Picture (cartoon, rainbow, N blue to C red):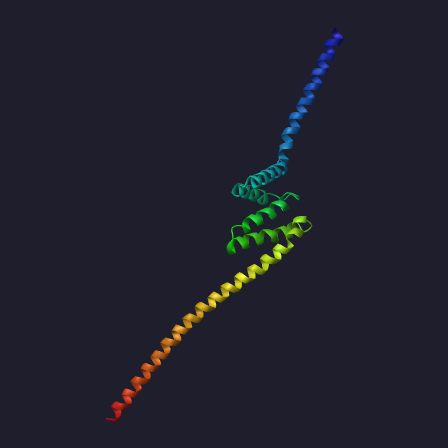
Length: 174
């Protein structure tokens, strides 16, 4: 019995040591939770997209892209978030989508999503140039309108001065 009692104590000690190592490894393993967290958030965003909840997916994707980058997750999230931003429409949506695609190309040049987005990025770049030209055109139109009004006012003043000069000339002759 003494021998079996000592075996029980040895087994118990080994189990305690192993369970202590498991607890320690869990504590130290939690420091790298960010990677699975990114993946979980990204998977959640994909699920929300499948369900049609674009706003919820957008929020999760934004959390993924502001966190430290993880190839295969962050690049995909950047691409999908850029597409969601484009749905906002207008100049602002285009600028935000384009800036996300530029970031994708800069941070993940070898990503499949960078290659997939090349044509879209080129289109958005030319679209941004078009918006800039439209702004310039509007500014020039406003300036032209202002100058036309000023020109009209100057012509009226010139006519008044001519009339005044003629009146003065007539008064001198009398």
